[in-house]
Amino acid sequence: MNRIRVLLLVAVLALVVAVPVLAQSGEPLKAAVDMGYVPFAFVNENGEEVGYAVDLANALAERMGRPSAEIVSVAWSGIFAALDAGRVDFIVAPTNIRPARAENMAFTEPYMDTAQLIALNIKYAGTVKTLEDLAGLTIGVNAGSVSDDWLVDNQAAYGYKIDRYDNLLDALLAVDTGRIDGVISDYEATAYAAKDRPNVIPGITITGSEQYGLPCQKNNTEFRNELERALEGIKLDGTLQAIHEKWFGVAPGDYSSSNLVYIGYGVPGMSGFQLIYHAPTMK
Image (cartoon, rainbow, N blue to C red; front, top):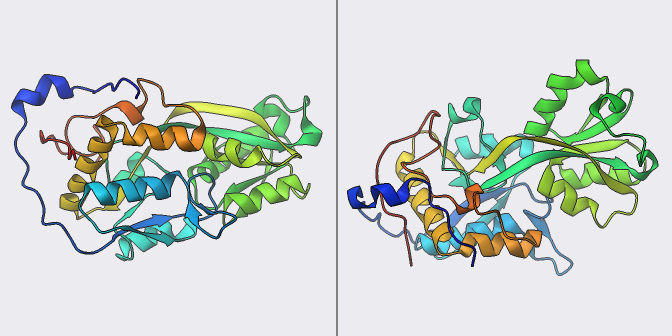
C-alpha cells in the first residue's frame, strides 16, 4: 500500500475532539453519477454499473454503516439540480472544486487531482500541438462542465467552435467518426475513453490545480462532515488508493489529494470550511 501522506493531521491528533457517531441509517447512500463518463461510471458488457465513482460510493456507504450505495444516473447538465432537490445525498461524479460552486454546495475535502485534456481526431496527429492550432476546429464538450467553462473563457483567444453533448462518450464518438475535430474533458476520463478508439489520440494537456471533491447540500454540513470522515478513513487505510490503481493502472502520487487528510471539514479557504478537529471513520 502507498505510504500515506497526512496533511497537518499528525500535528493535531492530540487535539482531536471526539465526534458523536451519527445513527447508522437503514437507507442506502444515494450517490449521483454521470453515467457514461468512463472510467468513473459506465455500464459494462454484462449490463453492470461499474467504475471508479461506483466503487467509491460503495466504499463510503460501507464505512458509514449504510446497507449499500444507490447509484443514481443524472445527466451532468442536471446533476446540481438533482442535489438541490434532494434526489441524491451527494454527487460522486467527478466534480471540480471551484469557489463559485462552494457558495452553493458543501464540498468535502479534495480526493483526487486532475487536469484538462483535449483529444483529437487522428488526422490532426503531428499538426495540432498548441492551443493556437485549434483555430477553426470544432471541439466537443460535456455541457455545463468545467471544461465547457474553459472553452467559453478561451474561445476568443484561440478561435475554435464549441459543440456541446450530454455525455463524454457521445462527444468522443463524434471525434472518432470525424463529425467534430476534438473533445475536451478531465484528463483521466478522456485518456481512458480514448484509448480504445483508433481514430482518437491524446492532444493537448492543460495543466492546473484542479481537484475533485464530493458535493453535498449546502445546508447539510452534518451529513457532509460524516461523509468526509468516511472519506478520510478510506484514504488512511488504502482503500481509496486501491480503487485508483484498479481503474487507472497506477497508484496516486504520495502528495496527491488521494493521499492527504486535511485539517477541518471541507475545502480550506472556501465557503463551507469548518475548522473542527475530528477523527476519521476507521473500520
